[in-house]
Amino acid sequence: MTTILSVRDVKKIIGKKTIVENVSFDVKQGEVFGFLGPNGAGKTTTIRMLVGLIKETEGTISIGGYSIKENFREAMRQIGSIVENPELYTYLTGWENLKQFARMLGGISDERIIEIAHMVHLDERIHDKVKTYSLGMKQRLGIAQALLGNPKLLILDEPTNGLDPAGIRELREFIHKLVKEENMSVFISSHLLSEVQMICDRVAIIHKGKMITVAKVEELIKTASDRVEWIVTPISKAKDMLVDAEEVREVSIEGNRLLCRMDIASISSWNKHFVANGIDVHSVKELVFTLEDLFIELTRGEQHA
Image 1 (cartoon, rainbow, N blue to C red):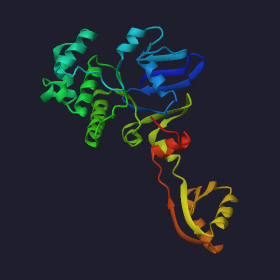
Image 2: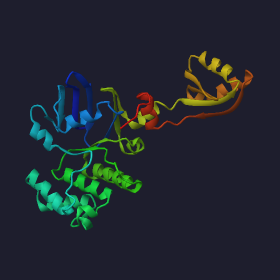
Image 3: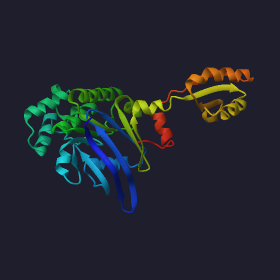
Image 4: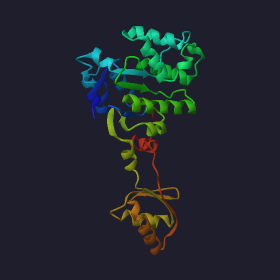
């Protein structure tokens, strides 16, 4: 699979402070890639380097095979981006906004504008004033601007900000369609981890300026598929038994819950083992983890953004 974005050993120092260090990841053609991190993790700084707003101190960033450092103009031609909120002229129509942006890019025909307006489902409202648009429509118009130059990579920073549930779902479906029909790569930063879990193929998590994981979403969640919750009495005796077992890990008590990591297939035998040793088992269940649960665990509960 072709690599559209390559980030290698990137470091950024501002003043005397290292903001990001040894950040590396790739985005492949036709994939949706999530970029996550708590407040102050270096996420925004990394995104600003990707879109050329600030320069990296060390390392290399290549987009579509072009190095930002060596061939900035061509590298930037490979991306379309919305960093924070799309910049729109609300007193103009959607069409006039796209025409204005097309003039800045150069070489964009009216046919391309019509094509993009159709792609983002704004055909019927493209000649209405933007001030009459819903937040979801404004977001789609912003994406239309980002797509005008036919980029290989679409970078969306917090694309769901301000959207209601219907708008979020609409955006999710549009991104899936864009990837499926246009084979485009999409890089998303979002604080809505439930959405990231549904829409992204892979995610990278940055924490304190360093990458802590880059993995497929399903594989990341699978790593937590061995968590088990027991409600037993006496709980301390059951805990001691689990602690002594080599195949059981991370045993802890939270309130009346006995938590551990074990092979799910061994739950039945452990249930019998507890009962045979005079322990009452009131309930046992496998804990289902979400991407948000794992994010909180990996970043030690720091607020994500």
